[in-house]
Amino acid sequence: MKFFIDTADISEIRELAAAGFLDGVTTNPSLIAKTGRPIRDVIKEICQTIEGPVSAEVTAIHFDGMIAEGERLASIAANVTVKVPSTWDGFRACRALSRLGHKVNVTLCFSANQALLAAKAGATFISPFVGRLDDLGLDGMEVIREIRTIYDNDKSFTTEILASSIRTPLHVKQAAMAGADIATVPPAVLRNLSKHPLTDRGLESFLADWGRTGQAIL
Image (cartoon, rainbow, N blue to C red; front, side, top):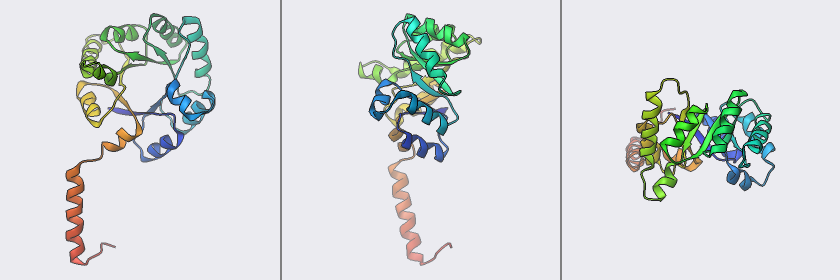
């Protein structure tokens, strides 16, 4: 499973990209707003930092506006993926933008039926929001499993499942087990994947024993 990072913070992106764990970046209007900078400048800098797909989201809610904004966003860099919502106009825009040769991430997906329409529209990525479904007392990962089954049943579909609204390391593991192609995660969650209390305890014990030997490897 590939890892995308869900942030517009360029310092976080640079640090994690240098560690070699990033395959792409996802942004949204809320993340861009937190930077206090023009969206074009933020997306351009991210695209210069990482070679993988960088999702930049339209804010228009109607077809014509989505196409105009999508074209403008796609012109920023070759690795921009235009992000559109899982609405009727969004699926229409996905189809049109895909036919123009642009990568498209269909976001705010909450059902397998929406994912089916996205695949039919030629989406590059579908972004089911598992955390927000969990917030409503539903099983977000079940939607991932349903989408995986639907996509596997039709070999003509090339849309990748991008598990989104990931809140915890457990979500990451569950997404991988459910068959997601990608998980987009906040920086803190990605770092927390390395943590386990028994690892810390074991390392502390090993270092204490080594210290008592008085030796040095170098």
